[in-house]
Length: 297
Image (cartoon, rainbow, N blue to C red; front, side, top):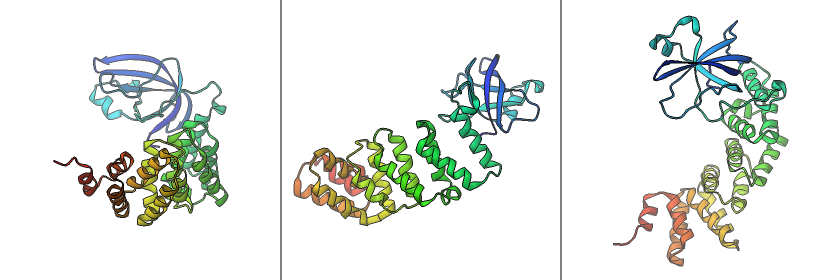
């Protein structure tokens, strides 16, 4: 989305312009968005001594997400006739390997979908395709599609009720891909989908992942505010598995609400030393929680 040029390309040459700068020549295999008219290849600037970042790979067809680097090329004194000059977008996932059949490659299809959306494609059809990708796509693409829908209220508002039901069911059912589960939960939270807070609390024992439990606390607090505490406490009281209880306590602490702090301090007072309660207080991150868990001098 932040790239000026998106295309399937193949690195066909490399030249050391200086000890600090390498220029890769990339052949355009299939233009997707922003390729200058008539251009069959572009030059990609690479600073290999800088921190790790994406760089062209020889003899491989990859998706290239490039940003204009004309000013950098001029500062480096590179010849204008070897342009146009670009540099690579550095985000993870912006330089994936592409299969031999471009029309069947899911990454190319996804990139073309986003490019069409930027040029006036029907928003309802775009939303339907994104929801289908978020539910049925490859692991990388389904997470990206969910994140994109969470960021785009104009598209999110076009998701049908039956599709929301499927997304919420996937939030509850997903147990292996935590990043994907978090992306779906955040998508539902942006829509303030009824039943999400309850699903997150009830499902806290299914995924013992710290990032997910923290996300559950943050999202339930966003949805329910101070009212989330009694709902979590009810589940803590009936939890038989110590791991389930520990997960629920951590979610409670991660809400960072005042009612959660009060409840955790009451539990600490009544139960004495309890590692799960201490961990939950640490997640609360308030001054009162920190003071409660500090060793006494």
